[in-house]
Length: 105
Image (cartoon, rainbow, N blue to C red; front, side):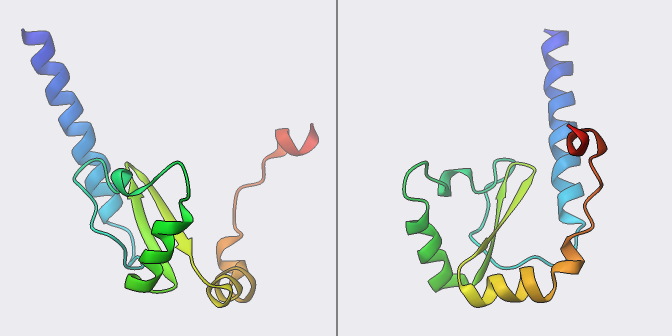
């Protein structure tokens, strides 16, 4: 009984840590309201994901943000949004670390 209580409290503390760490970031684009801890997992489908993405584009605009657990997803729903973010401002997003091992293989 005590072990399961400790595990449950540890899981709760870890989930709250992830939740609050994610909320400290900068402003994100609008998107559907996420469920606590799970995010927008119920909004994603394995087939025809473009159908809900098109509805989100109509409701929230060309750039839509979703939470899936601790992961953030950004949907770019128009060629203009893609060009603006990835081509015009690509230098902002291209500061990924160099992967030496995978680059040499």
